[in-house]
Length: 214
Image 1: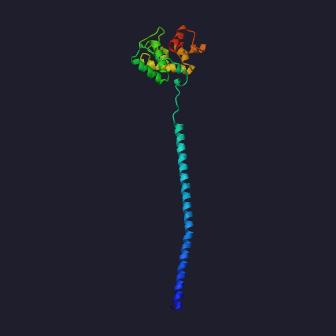
Image 2: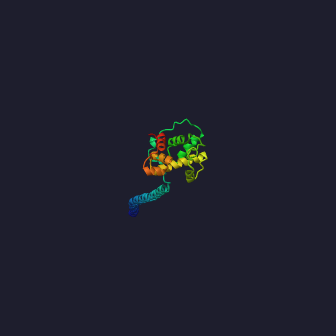
Image 3: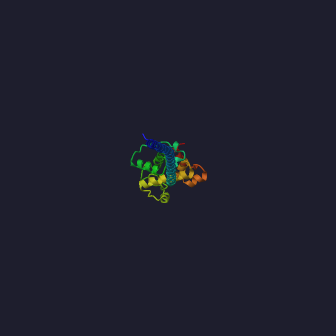
């Protein structure tokens, strides 16, 4: 073989080896670069995800706070405050249609149902036409001036019971005691204020004792 041919082949081999080496080196340099790019891209994605979830969390918190602020306030009825646990149960014989009506009235105005049933039993014996010598009318024995104050028709059983329950609830809010509320229902709030307790009237003291207990 001619020396020139040998030299040409050697040059070709060397050139090929150089090209291979450069390719390997290029790949070696490129791989870390690609890894860094992947790492950079991953960090960016994580950062973006955290940013977006942070925004969502903030919005959710704001919506929750707004919903709490807009939520209606709880209404504290008298039965949430005081001595209703001491109320004795109603064990009267009357089981007619006005019993459920009286329970509903008590529920509407937040007063102990058994207490109100005992009051009606004592006031009228469940007679919707009952009328006292003082002019009190109906199941809850509302006097005309009290009925006008409450805006109810005392001759209508439903309105009479509703007015009686509302008036008893008002007396409880005024005096903070069912015992005194009953006394005010019977003798009037001014009498309770005057004595600072159940007035020393035989009728009123007996009234409170029968309904509330002695």
